[in-house]
Length: 271
Ligand SMILES: NC(=O)c1ccc[n+]([C@@H]2O[C@H](COP(=O)([O-])OP(=O)(O)OC[C@H]3O[C@@H](n4cnc5c(N)ncnc54)[C@H](OP(=O)(O)O)[C@@H]3O)[C@@H](O)[C@H]2O)c1
Image (cartoon, rainbow, N blue to C red):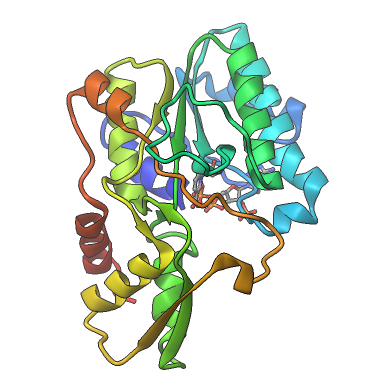
C-alpha cells in the first residue's frame, strides 16, 4: 500500500526501481546483497513488512523474520557503501498509556508481537546504519491496499448496522500524504527518527462515522464498543497519537488534517 504511493511520488524526481516480493525476499540476506550490488542505489526504501497485526500473534517467526531480521539484511547490505536507508515503523511500538502525543525519544514498550517485531527492526537499523530515516506512522490507508476505509464501505453494502471500537485513539494517515512527507525528508537530507501521520486524532468509531458521512451514506446505525468485546488475538494501544513537532521543525511543513486527507482519498478512489 505505502510502497505503491512512494513509487508514484518519488518517480517524479528520482529514478526509482520498485521491487515486490516476487523480485526480492528481504528475509534472504543474499537477495538483499545481490539487489544492492546490481542496482547500486543511493537510497534504499523499505516499505515491506509483515503487517497482519493479529496474524503476528500466531506467525511469530515469520513476523520477526520480516519485520526484524530482514532489517539486519538490508542494513548490512547498505553498510559498506553508506547507502541511505528509509524504513517504516509504527505507533504500536508504544504501550498506549501516554496522555499526550508520543515524541520520537519516548520509551518503546510494545504490547503485541507486531509492535515487538517492529521495535526489534528499529534496533537493528539504528545499530547497523548511521545513515537512515526511520519513520513511525499509524493507521494507514491508501488506494493500493486493504484498509479500514475500504472495509467500512464494503461492510455497509450488506449491512445497516456496524459496531466499531471507541477506546483506541490514533491518527488515520493517507499513504499519499505520507509519501509526500518522505519525499520532503529525503530532499532535505534529514536523518534520524521522525513521527509522521495526518494531523489530529480520533477513535476508530469516530473515523468510521466520518467515513460514512464523507461517502454520503446516512442510513447506517454505528454503535461504539469497547475493544475487549472483539477479543482479537493482538492487544492494541489505547492511545497512540504521535507528536509531529520534530517533522514540522525539520521541514517547515505540516501534514493536512486527517479529515481532509480522507476527503482526498475518497475523491481519488471511488469505492
Ligand atoms: N498499515 C498500517 O496501518 C501501518 C501502520 C503503521 C506502520 N505501518 C508500516 O508502514 C509500512 C508499510 O505498510 P503497508 O500497510 O503499506 O504494508 P502492506 O500493504 O502490507 O505492504 C507490505 C508489503 O511487504 C511485502 N512483503 C512481505 N514480506 C516480504 C518479504 N519477505 N520480502 C519482500 N516483501 C515482503 C508484502 O507482500 P505480500 O502482501 O505479498 O505478503 C506487501 O506487498 C510497514 O513498515 C508497516 O509496518 C503500517
